[in-house]
Image (cartoon, rainbow, N blue to C red):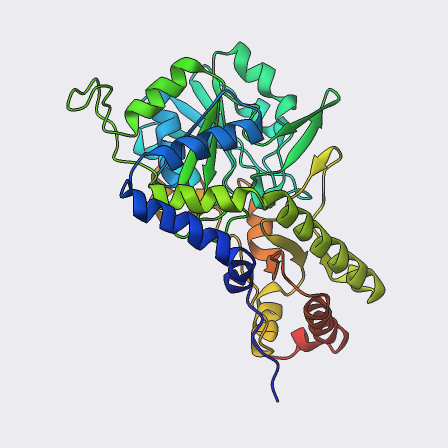
Length: 384
């Protein structure tokens, strides 16, 4: 009998753990008949602001909108440059172009996959209006290595925390959370995120009173007083049901993140026991970081054949991301060519995300590792 399919992320297992309290929260909203930007959204914003240790948090419709609202609130527009990574989800860069600014790419670190602080410093110009470091796959960028330099130039720091809620970094002896270090932090509550809802949703964090006011206006069509509009904004409101669900799930986030870290430890132990180091490299955790492993991304040889091999054995592995953003057809107008960001381009060919979620069982990880060992030990990649 064939083994059951092992997904890259199993939402159903997580649902069973919080089903009762989540249904109670949803029914409470239904009974209230208040569905948009109500008391549950207010409470969630306060909960997350407290969790992040920031002054303000504002819910919105998606992580993409969080980035877009952030750039709009900061006045980023035509003639401005925004430095970011070419190795990320599409929205990181599309939001820059949507406000009319120019994306400027800086290559990434081969171990952490995050944007390189040194490369950011090399890209700063008089036109730099903002820098968007992406805390990729659940690990924070070393923002302290460039934050003062961009501040001196009058540029803004916008943290893309879509994959990193709960991630921390020790800076000057203090534990700092992703989303609390920049002018603005941007979060996604897409269902597969560490803190995921049951639909789309996002949030923006800031310590600036003025930015908080403007973001809250921009998310409701640029309105302060109803039907009076100071500027053209978006329709980007978080609904009450999602907020209620997220409040339940936030109570469990630290537990689930620790369980993800246990999954990492088990993978590392298995890879070492099976002497897989010749072929694969587990994700690195930078000194001072607490990685929360939104994805478990290894570097490996013969990536595409390994992915197919695993799929044939019912193991779902995914590629994040198969084409660097500077090479995407829609960004060809920027004029970048293949070879300009060699680390990002290499990672797009060599990285593979293995199954990871809080409820992943040790025996399932053993199955994954054994299949990888069989692939390499038997030279499967040498066969057509």
